[in-house]
Length: 389
Image (cartoon, rainbow, N blue to C red; front, side, top):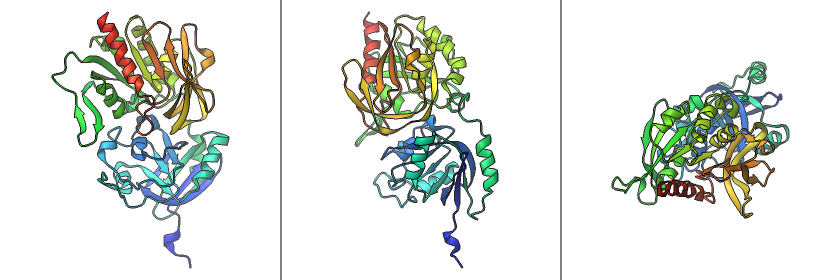
């Protein structure tokens, strides 16, 4: 008789009909979501708490997940947002001086499901070749799974197209942010209250990561964060010297139903600097008349090469998006500034002669390289130039 401890306690069923058995950890239960893969070697906690992963289960191609534990300092939102994770090896005991807890316990307390013991290389190849599938991830300590019902649910899930998730992950009311980037021996320092005339930034929260807000504060900005549904009048009532459009999840066209009219009103302010990242980039593109498209499997990782068209420089970037701006739809007066060297997709735009620009990738990294951190300084420079004028 086989050892009961060898029985699978978790199962992943995709709409394509593939069934994967493994060992469950974290919370028990079931979740239906889009299945994507992420190629980052570090930063699993930042990835799980990135609001852009709402509605998705993340397969990590790096096999060792959980070995550095959990620390509240790495959270990019109050709670994990990714619906679940798929890993090659079961999470091991944390071994890191910053660790304040274990991944398994953290996921259990936060209601997120994990499955280990899968061939993540095979799963990643399938996603790359066939596109990001819909799937059901289940964790049951008894090892009992209704495969037919899970397959039915996976095939019946409508997916992310047409789904506005930004409203769900956005803040409910405005708040101020003054915390700066983490520094060795200091932690997260607050902005200097004695600083002379800090830059005034309004950040529209479509699912903003905390390290993006910290990167803005690092430039000397005083930040007011507003919900995704904020109107142009509410934004302008704060007399901002610049407006930031944050990252976020879901279909940009769905979020654009309320975000695009607001951004167009802001664009009527000819000298107002605007900076967008990820979903904010897509919102800006829609506002100027471009289109967005659903990608086959998206870009998710911390090693994506992007070419800066102005000088040919290549930046290694952190990405997390399943939709992209259609470069062929960019109107006159909108310049394509960055292009993915993986597939040629659009990664940045700017408005000719105006302090308005955006990028598809994450210049704050978290996790990832910091090749593109200069964009926050560019935004600050645009605001200071406007102030000087």
